[in-house]
Structures are given as structure tokens and as C-alpha cells.
Amino acid sequence: MNIKSIFATLLLMLSGAVSFAQQTAQGDSPENGKPKMAVVELSTVYMRVSPDYESSLETQELMGTVVEIVGSSGYWREIVSPQPYKAWCTDKGIVPMSEQEIQEYVKAPKLMFTGLYGHIYSSKSTCSQTICDLVGGDILRQGGDVSHKWIEVVTPSGKKGFVQKELLKEFSGFRSLQWSKNRDELPEYQSFISDKDKERIIGSAMQLLGVPYLWGGMSPKGVDCSGLVRWACLMNGILLPRNASQQVFCGKEIPVDADPAYWDEDARGNQAAFKEEMQRRISKLKRGDLLFFGTPATAEKGRRITHVGIYTGNGKMIHSSHLVRVNSLVPDEADYYENAHRLLAAVRL
Image (cartoon, rainbow, N blue to C red):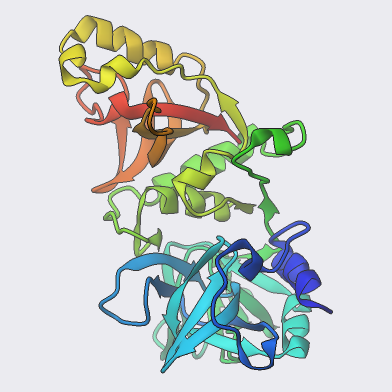
């Protein structure tokens, strides 16, 4: 199995995928020129800009995710994840695997942890020694011991333990949304995400209400705005790209037709006119639509997407800003979002 087919097959994450490294800038080549692969071992691996604990956090990746190793520096490894994202993590956070081991990993039955936070226990008791922690979205291989309340699981490194059965569900892969900055390159959009899926996505996001904002966060331990959206979709079997600037090109664009005049504070001083403007912008939205905020295009620069949330209906959205919260997009409401005027675009998955 070559690198292209491996990445196309892994966890059924991507359809017709190419090597992750081909989607990013070229990094240092591993020995003998062949890409090396690994599987994330920790509940969340922290991917940093450079091989240093003081370096800024770029993103997180979850247990069970297959990554490509493209460079090394001491005990740091430069990896490319399916987000797609290239950054550095420590060698303790991943388990390198041979081609044969990767193939066996792909074929093994897997489970997804559905709780927000939990543990793998050494025996069938929450009083037993913990093996490691878990967060929602972690992928585990299934072991052979299954009882009424517990399932044996296996970490990527081969450690065995037990997780409460009610906190696990069978994992059969993700559905991946195609995206391109040039929408004309994509086939005519046809949604495979049902209204039920969208309700589940909103429900998953609501589980993180009150969780602190964390730049680069993509788990219940902390999320940024696009991390919240990606995690809520991931929990429901849907794979989105990592950043808001990429997510805006997924799905079907819903016209918002924002008036750039309202980026000026003086224009927003006319409360009645501004309220009418915001009500007009959200008039075509439906629950589950993704909302994007930023700076409109000018003669010198294109538009800039800086924030994303999920529309929950009745003029409100859930998003991560300071913390995960629900805010109104309509002026004069008690929970009005202070940057609602920056609403630029919306897409329907």
C-alpha cells in the first residue's frame, strides 16, 4: 500500500486524499526519503509553531489520529495532520508505525469516546488505576473483553484498559466535506448533512458552554472559534478543515450581503438602522449554518475571515469568544455579541 492509498484509507477520513505533506509546505525529509507515519497517543497532542515548549500553540490533535512525520529536532517531531496542519509535538505524543502496523491499525475495529472528559482504567472500576485521560472525539481500538458496563480498549501504543460502555460508540469513519477557495472547482453542492445531523452538531457545541477560549484549542480542554466548530462536527462524524478561513469555503454559501458602512462605529450609532441591517443579514439563515466574521474587502485587500460560530436560530449563535457562549446578533438584546456587525458570510453544510 503506497502513501497515497494509505492516507486515502486511514480511518475513512478523507476521500481521494493525497499525502498530507503535499498539501503543506515542504519540510525536512525523514531518512531514506520515505514518509513516516504515526498515530496520536495522548488524549490531545499539542502542536506548536516550533520545537519548543515556549512556542505558541497552533492546534491540537486527538488520540487515534494518523499523522505524517516530516521532520525532527531532539525529542520534537514535526508532523502533518489531516486538518491539514503542519507543526511540532513531542515524541511522547505519537507512536511511529511501520507500513504493516499502519495497515493493521486501519483494519482494527475502533470506538470513539463520546464523553467530554474521562479516563481509561486498568480494570473494570473507576476506583482502579488510570492509564490515561480521554476527551471527546478520541479514537481507540477495541479489545476483546466486553461486559455489560465496560469495554476493553487499546491505545495506539498497545496499552490495554477499560472504558465505560455508555461513553463509547462504534467508529466507522468520517464524512469529509470538499472545499476550495475557488468554488467553481467543486462539483455542484449536494448536502449529505441532514437536519438531524445539524441538531446533533449544535448539541455537541452546547456541551462546551463555559469552556475557556484557548488559541489553537480543539477539545473540551479548551477551544478557539474554529476549533469549537470542527470539534462539534467531528463528534458527529463530519470532518471539516481546521481554520475559519478554510471552513468558509465548505458547503453552500448563503447570501448575507453585509453593508460595509456598518464597520464604522458612527454608522452603528443609528440603532434603528443598524438593527434593521442585522435582521436583514440573518433573514435567510437556518439552524446549523456556519457564520463568519471579519473585515470586508477593499480596493487594496480581499476580505479577511477572523471568527466563526454556529447559528442556533432566533438571531442567536454559539461560538467561542473569551469562552464558549451563546450570543444574539441583533442589537439591543441583552446577550448581543459586541462584534456582530462584523458578520460577513454564512455557509450551509
